[in-house]
Amino acid sequence: MPLIAVVDYDMGNLHSACKGIENAGATTLVTDAPKDIERADAVVLPGVGSFDPAVQHLRSRRLEEPIKQAIASGKPFLGICLGLQILFEGSEEGSEPGLGIIPGWVRRFRSEPDLRIPHMGWNNLEFIQPDCPLWQQLSDCPQVYFVHSYYVDPVDPTIRAATVTHGSQTVTAAIARDNMMAVQFHPEKSAGIGLQILSNFVAQVKTTVSV
Image 1 (cartoon, one colour):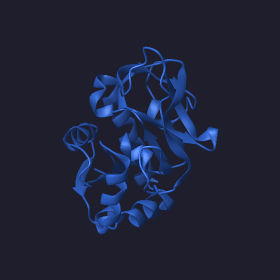
Image 2 (tube, one colour; image 1 turned 135 degrees about the horizontal axis):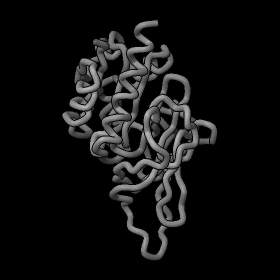
Image 3 (cartoon, helix red, strand yellow; image 1 turned 45 degrees about the vertical axis):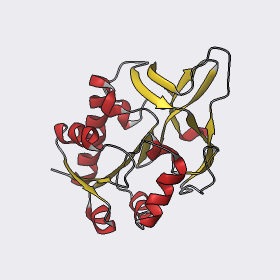
Protein backbone atom coordinates (compact mmCIF):
# COMPACT_ATOMS: atom_id res chain seq x y z
CA MET A 1 0.00 0.00 0.00
CA PRO A 2 1.21 3.54 -0.70
CA LEU A 3 2.50 5.57 2.24
CA ILE A 4 0.86 8.98 2.72
CA ALA A 5 2.45 11.47 5.12
CA VAL A 6 -0.15 13.51 7.04
CA VAL A 7 1.61 16.65 8.25
CA ASP A 8 1.16 17.31 11.98
CA TYR A 9 1.72 20.92 13.03
CA ASP A 10 -0.79 21.11 15.91
CA MET A 11 -3.55 22.63 13.80
CA GLY A 12 -6.41 20.15 13.91
CA ASN A 13 -7.59 16.64 14.67
CA LEU A 14 -6.01 14.36 12.11
CA HIS A 15 -7.81 11.13 13.03
CA SER A 16 -10.80 11.48 10.70
CA ALA A 17 -8.71 12.32 7.64
CA CYS A 18 -6.37 9.42 8.35
CA LYS A 19 -9.27 7.01 8.76
CA GLY A 20 -10.76 7.99 5.39
CA ILE A 21 -7.41 7.61 3.65
CA GLU A 22 -6.75 4.24 5.28
CA ASN A 23 -10.21 2.97 4.32
CA ALA A 24 -9.31 3.79 0.71
CA GLY A 25 -6.32 1.48 0.85
CA ALA A 26 -3.32 3.57 1.87
CA THR A 27 -1.07 3.64 4.92
CA THR A 28 -0.93 6.96 6.78
CA LEU A 29 1.95 8.36 8.78
CA VAL A 30 1.17 11.35 11.00
CA THR A 31 4.45 13.20 11.22
CA ASP A 32 6.29 16.48 11.64
CA ALA A 33 9.59 15.02 10.46
CA PRO A 34 10.96 16.28 7.12
CA LYS A 35 12.52 12.87 6.37
CA ASP A 36 9.08 11.23 6.57
CA ILE A 37 7.63 13.74 4.12
CA GLU A 38 10.51 13.07 1.76
CA ARG A 39 10.12 9.28 1.77
CA ALA A 40 6.32 9.23 1.57
CA ASP A 41 4.53 8.51 -1.71
CA ALA A 42 2.15 11.46 -1.15
CA VAL A 43 1.50 14.26 1.32
CA VAL A 44 -1.69 15.51 2.98
CA LEU A 45 -1.65 18.91 4.70
CA PRO A 46 -4.80 19.31 6.82
CA GLY A 47 -5.56 22.21 9.13
CA VAL A 48 -8.14 23.89 11.34
CA GLY A 49 -7.68 27.29 12.97
CA SER A 50 -6.04 30.62 12.16
CA PHE A 51 -3.57 31.51 9.43
CA ASP A 52 -0.73 33.07 11.47
CA PRO A 53 -0.34 30.27 14.05
CA ALA A 54 -0.45 27.71 11.23
CA VAL A 55 2.48 29.13 9.29
CA GLN A 56 4.36 29.85 12.53
CA HIS A 57 4.00 26.23 13.60
CA LEU A 58 5.11 24.98 10.19
CA ARG A 59 8.19 27.17 10.19
CA SER A 60 9.10 26.35 13.80
CA ARG A 61 9.20 22.68 12.76
CA ARG A 62 11.18 23.49 9.60
CA LEU A 63 8.45 22.03 7.43
CA GLU A 64 8.11 24.82 4.86
CA GLU A 65 10.88 23.61 2.54
CA PRO A 66 9.99 19.89 2.80
CA ILE A 67 6.41 20.71 1.76
CA LYS A 68 7.61 22.84 -1.15
CA GLN A 69 10.06 20.14 -2.21
CA ALA A 70 7.37 17.45 -2.03
CA ILE A 71 5.12 19.45 -4.37
CA ALA A 72 8.00 20.27 -6.71
CA SER A 73 8.98 16.59 -6.86
CA GLY A 74 5.66 15.67 -8.47
CA LYS A 75 4.29 13.47 -5.70
CA PRO A 76 0.54 13.85 -5.11
CA PHE A 77 -0.34 16.54 -2.58
CA LEU A 78 -3.69 17.29 -0.94
CA GLY A 79 -4.33 20.36 1.21
CA ILE A 80 -7.48 20.50 3.35
CA CYS A 81 -9.14 23.71 4.66
CA LEU A 82 -6.36 25.73 6.32
CA GLY A 83 -3.95 23.46 4.45
CA LEU A 84 -5.24 25.12 1.27
CA GLN A 85 -5.01 28.68 2.56
CA ILE A 86 -1.41 28.55 3.77
CA LEU A 87 -0.24 27.63 0.25
CA PHE A 88 -0.95 31.25 -0.74
CA GLU A 89 1.12 34.40 -0.29
CA GLY A 90 -0.76 35.79 2.70
CA SER A 91 -4.13 36.30 4.35
CA GLU A 92 -6.38 39.11 5.46
CA GLU A 93 -6.74 37.10 8.66
CA GLY A 94 -3.17 37.82 9.79
CA SER A 95 0.19 39.36 9.00
CA GLU A 96 2.46 36.33 8.50
CA PRO A 97 3.57 35.48 4.96
CA GLY A 98 2.15 32.25 3.62
CA LEU A 99 4.17 29.59 1.85
CA GLY A 100 3.79 31.46 -1.44
CA ILE A 101 3.47 28.30 -3.52
CA ILE A 102 0.39 29.71 -5.23
CA PRO A 103 0.27 33.41 -6.22
CA GLY A 104 -2.76 35.01 -4.62
CA TRP A 105 -4.30 35.99 -1.33
CA VAL A 106 -6.70 34.68 1.29
CA ARG A 107 -9.68 37.03 1.74
CA ARG A 108 -12.56 37.38 4.15
CA PHE A 109 -16.17 37.08 3.00
CA ARG A 110 -17.74 40.51 2.53
CA SER A 111 -20.52 41.32 4.97
CA GLU A 112 -24.03 41.16 3.49
CA PRO A 113 -27.49 41.42 5.04
CA ASP A 114 -28.47 38.04 6.49
CA LEU A 115 -25.16 36.45 5.44
CA ARG A 116 -23.78 34.17 8.11
CA ILE A 117 -20.03 34.32 8.66
CA PRO A 118 -18.41 31.89 9.09
CA HIS A 119 -19.77 29.95 6.15
CA MET A 120 -20.70 26.81 8.07
CA GLY A 121 -22.59 23.73 6.90
CA TRP A 122 -23.40 21.87 3.71
CA ASN A 123 -23.14 23.56 0.33
CA ASN A 124 -22.89 22.56 -3.32
CA LEU A 125 -19.68 22.44 -5.32
CA GLU A 126 -19.65 23.76 -8.86
CA PHE A 127 -16.94 21.97 -10.82
CA ILE A 128 -14.64 24.21 -12.86
CA GLN A 129 -12.22 21.40 -13.72
CA PRO A 130 -14.59 18.44 -14.18
CA ASP A 131 -11.66 16.18 -15.06
CA CYS A 132 -9.87 16.84 -11.75
CA PRO A 133 -8.93 13.47 -10.21
CA LEU A 134 -10.72 14.37 -6.96
CA TRP A 135 -14.13 14.56 -8.69
CA GLN A 136 -14.18 11.11 -10.28
CA GLN A 137 -17.41 9.13 -9.71
CA LEU A 138 -19.16 12.18 -8.22
CA SER A 139 -22.44 13.58 -9.48
CA ASP A 140 -22.69 17.22 -10.54
CA CYS A 141 -22.92 19.79 -7.72
CA PRO A 142 -22.30 17.44 -4.78
CA GLN A 143 -22.81 18.73 -1.26
CA VAL A 144 -19.80 18.96 1.05
CA TYR A 145 -19.22 20.43 4.49
CA PHE A 146 -17.63 23.87 4.99
CA VAL A 147 -16.45 25.80 8.05
CA HIS A 148 -14.60 29.00 7.09
CA SER A 149 -14.67 32.78 7.17
CA TYR A 150 -11.90 33.20 4.60
CA TYR A 151 -11.45 31.93 1.05
CA VAL A 152 -8.55 31.77 -1.39
CA ASP A 153 -8.31 34.17 -4.32
CA PRO A 154 -5.70 32.87 -6.81
CA VAL A 155 -4.08 35.21 -9.32
CA ASP A 156 -4.42 32.54 -12.00
CA PRO A 157 -8.13 31.66 -12.32
CA THR A 158 -7.36 28.49 -14.28
CA ILE A 159 -6.09 26.83 -11.09
CA ARG A 160 -9.65 26.75 -9.70
CA ALA A 161 -11.04 23.22 -9.66
CA ALA A 162 -14.39 24.09 -8.03
CA THR A 163 -16.32 27.04 -6.62
CA VAL A 164 -19.02 27.50 -4.00
CA THR A 165 -21.61 30.26 -3.63
CA HIS A 166 -22.34 31.79 -0.22
CA GLY A 167 -24.83 34.64 -0.31
CA SER A 168 -24.07 36.60 -3.47
CA GLN A 169 -20.38 35.64 -3.43
CA THR A 170 -18.99 32.82 -5.55
CA VAL A 171 -15.52 31.87 -4.33
CA THR A 172 -12.87 29.22 -4.86
CA ALA A 173 -13.67 25.93 -3.11
CA ALA A 174 -10.82 23.85 -4.53
CA ILE A 175 -7.69 24.23 -6.61
CA ALA A 176 -5.77 21.77 -8.78
CA ARG A 177 -2.56 22.07 -10.76
CA ASP A 178 -0.59 19.04 -11.88
CA ASN A 179 0.10 16.93 -8.75
CA MET A 180 -1.11 19.61 -6.30
CA MET A 181 -4.74 19.60 -5.15
CA ALA A 182 -6.36 21.37 -2.22
CA VAL A 183 -9.90 21.94 -0.96
CA GLN A 184 -11.53 24.51 1.31
CA PHE A 185 -14.18 22.11 2.61
CA HIS A 186 -13.68 19.12 4.92
CA PRO A 187 -13.88 15.81 3.02
CA GLU A 188 -13.50 13.94 6.32
CA LYS A 189 -16.77 15.57 7.49
CA SER A 190 -18.59 15.26 4.16
CA ALA A 191 -20.03 11.76 4.58
CA GLY A 192 -19.99 9.52 1.49
CA ILE A 193 -19.02 12.29 -0.92
CA GLY A 194 -16.00 13.15 1.19
CA LEU A 195 -14.94 9.53 1.47
CA GLN A 196 -15.14 9.23 -2.31
CA ILE A 197 -12.93 12.31 -2.69
CA LEU A 198 -10.33 10.83 -0.33
CA SER A 199 -10.59 7.52 -2.19
CA ASN A 200 -10.02 9.36 -5.48
CA PHE A 201 -6.88 10.95 -4.03
CA VAL A 202 -5.58 7.55 -2.92
CA ALA A 203 -6.31 6.15 -6.39
CA GLN A 204 -4.25 8.97 -7.89
CA VAL A 205 -1.40 8.14 -5.48
CA LYS A 206 -1.53 4.46 -6.48
CA THR A 207 -1.39 5.40 -10.15
CA THR A 208 1.63 7.60 -9.55
CA VAL A 209 3.42 4.96 -7.49
CA SER A 210 2.84 2.26 -10.11
CA VAL A 211 4.24 4.32 -12.98
